Image 1 (cartoon, rainbow, N blue to C red):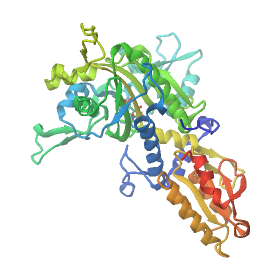
Image 2 (cartoon, rainbow, N blue to C red):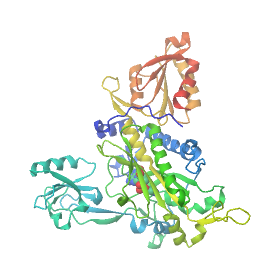
Image 3 (cartoon, rainbow, N blue to C red):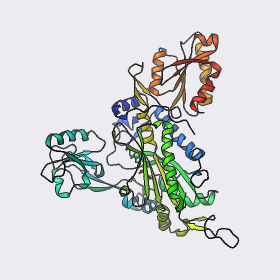
Length: 527
Ligand code: GAP
């Protein structure tokens, strides 16, 4: 199991999203998609450092979920956790989305403001109202996790001479809607009734592009797993309990994309569908719920900004039997939290739906030779059933965003006042090698050390080298990019075969032997 994060918790509330976004742009972590054409709302590109950071997070997940599932732990059944990978297509047969319920039910109810033409997710709007009255007093609506909350609170405090309360817009009686002041409006009563919007992107397959050719970009990777369940069972030696894992793009035509990459229209998921017998499902749910939290801690999100939140029964999807979210306190959600990953106990809903809609019926069931009444020969008779499913479903882009927010640290006493304190496992630059000055034989030694480290560690990140500018400026650039270790070749290297190693988090420098640098870095990176 990787080392737990060494970063001390940093108060997310104190961090400015504008500053984090500015650093992301300046250092090539995240760019607006199609920026030279004015951008396109809800789409983001990852620059060189961001692409590597994202790959490192995806690789860490793949390593810990597929290659060495759950760090070799045993599950509630006493066996080691088993998973197999899959890579399914973005466009599936449209009937997949009928069976999954996405065509009929993948809707966000929205409310429009007639005055400002802004559109809000119905379930994200709350109102400040005078406590316990049904008077004529106005109600001040705001959108959860945005600056509208403070603005509307101030207005409400000015208006009300007694205590006020916060109520969900959906709990306001229709008769009281004319009293609601929309989050950005001047006049009251401008919000419309909620309307449904399907979030799936439509496209056409084939040249004729008629209504019969309509297809959808997948809104989740999960369904690709369910529809290949039988093929995986038939072609591998997996036995229940086991998981099928995949990472990949998902698309949702979000009506209000916002908060940087948090709610995007194109994003990446990392999902496991873990199949087990109904009698063990709740135990597996507890297992995954706990382990997923530990995993996010292990890659640098340990501390008070991370929490595990159990979804109240009334908020669960109709098919779900239990659910927990791993949540992070982003600067834009603080003091509240935003979801990074949902762990859901989905029952046998999905396999049953596909069995029904595909006509395969009982053929999608799993035959379990270890269960059932004992036969005269003492062997169990076997049992055919739809397995129950535990689904840990993580957002890769949200994970990257949480890592960026957690890593962002300001320290005015340092040459670079902005430092990205990435956990070494996900850091896009693993190390830098600098000649102190660009002469006297130092560049040649630095080049050799750089080539050695690149050959050894270059698979998981960049090994930088740079001979320009003062050494202080070069350290500052590496601090901003989140490089954990800088090795500097100086005059003593040539005489004593040692280099300095500088620790990003403390700024402290030590001397180590030139031929020990590889081993030192291997220990620090866990490689
Ligand atoms: N198969 C289950 C599923 O898709 P979900 O809660 O809708 O569940 C899982 O999505 C994860 O995908 C979320 O926890 C979140 O991290 C990520 N996600 C969902 N919508 C997103 C969006 N619009 N932008 C970025 N990430 C998103």
